[in-house]
Length: 275
Image 1 (cartoon, rainbow, N blue to C red):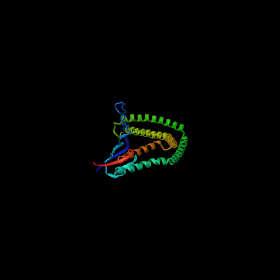
Image 2: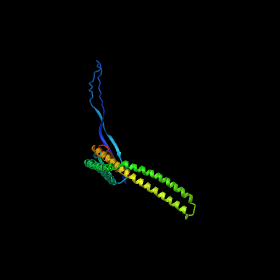
Image 3: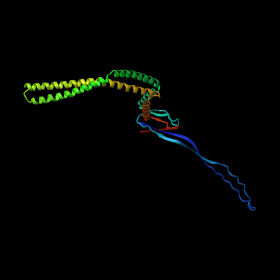
């Protein structure tokens, strides 16, 4: 596999000027004639071209070069793709998917708001139905009945305790013993009566609790639907938009490892090196 090293050079002319001027005038005397000296106005200048910026560019991922888009001496602009690896296709597809998801959030803003409004309206209907059902529950009567059943349960617990004590007196007797059988039957009956009364209490409590729970859930759903609709008035959902933008940036970063792009404008010098 070969690795491409690209060197970008942006040139500016730097002139190093060495200015030189020579001249002088002798002192006139009667004995020594003065020669005429002409001052020189020549300028000696040295020029040299040096790059303002220069950098070596390398891939951040391993792969086979698929295409080189520039030749030595080409002038490129910042951001131009210079070289591409063959395995860049998958990363490009991810960028496209992420870009489409981000654009869709922006494009479907009005449509999403209409859907959120519809959800809010439906939530109001469900809440109204649950509220009506809750208002139809005679909570006072239900709670009075619950209190009554709780009292019955306490009485039945006492009866069960007594039945258990009576059975304990005869439990060591033969199973066919009349007193033992009678005590055992009384114990079983007390247990059944207590269980039946507990189920009755649970049923009575459900006539209140299930309706109240449904009403509370409807209220919460309506509040959430209202919140989602109201924040949509400010534009696309900020959290969803931020997530989509983060996904797009991550996809672009991944793609950049399979491409070499010009970090600034300048001239390109391409050198292939084995590696």
